[in-house]
Image (cartoon, rainbow, N blue to C red; front, side, top):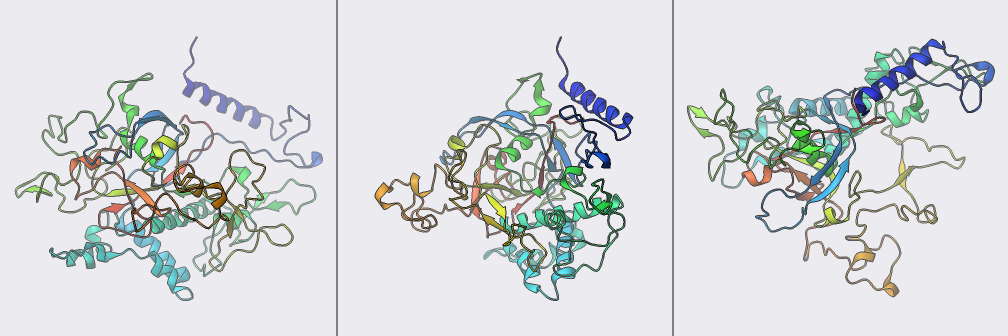
Length: 491
């Protein structure tokens, strides 16, 4: 008899929770016989856990296998997206692109907390509104109005570099987890946070942020004080918000979950919807364009009186129809940053499971006593790259920086000779001669999705382009993702 995995996992989780609760905190370890949650046996605490909470703005994306890469004719002849079957874990992704109002909220918080002492923090985060300027076009109104005017409040933020987008995701993690602790009655509201005295998830878990405590967790350790801060083992705090990997973004954009019968994919999609045309075939919306794109030379929104996509530039993030995962504007409107570093042949090199290029493995900086070093002046834990000595006996990696592994590091260079190997950190003669014969280096980041100024070719999820991670344009935005912990099946 076959089992429905969703029903099976849901029943298993429910059954485990019932057993735990019925034991009134006296569950016994099946391996040692000692009682959990009992100060008399040492106070080892086991927290009942059923399901990861869905963070604000996120949609659950059930993972699986799919063919990543080219589905359209390679009209650019880049050959940088060869089809490759991979598997993506379940994860969460923002329902929409990050809006102007979301980013302005971020800027307001930075100004309130750091503006007086560290004004450079706010300046670093400001979008480049000058991206709207064009030498032979009059775009000055967007320079002054697009980011902050309420008319554009629900439009996607642009002029944001990859680095700024990653910083926003880290900030959002801390604000969401702080709100969770306030909601759970652990912390009080603290509107007077200033400089290093601000809530940071990693600093809190490392015991380097106290905050205004309302009521700590009960500590069953007989040697303790009877209370403790929240730990990762409690399952209360959410994983970090981050940029999606290229594979995650492409998988979510295709939305194949709505196009399968059991494990058979009925039609391999060209766009985030069925068919090979850009117009709706539904009776009520017949002929309406499905995405905010440039239809042809000089045609960005249609003819007056019947504006087809109704978007001269970008449009509100909830415009058009969501795909089968419930995600809006995964084609058109703005391109979106993803987490990966660009290499032309990444599809040939990356792993079959959770493919990604861009790993730099790090550890928290420790003090002389082996404890996590004090946080920095902005209230953040300091990280460092792992050393070659620390990973000398490992089989899965040997160095911290694996961005160029098999495509761009010193050993993969066509100029490499063993007797010329230099110390780690000295690039020597590398495969990608940046600024001379290539624009590719370790700061080239992938963006995908097509935009309001792109032709239909670029809204195919398998297409990919790159830009320096410190640069920004008026047609690139972003959305955040979050790792799914536990079962890949959403209950």
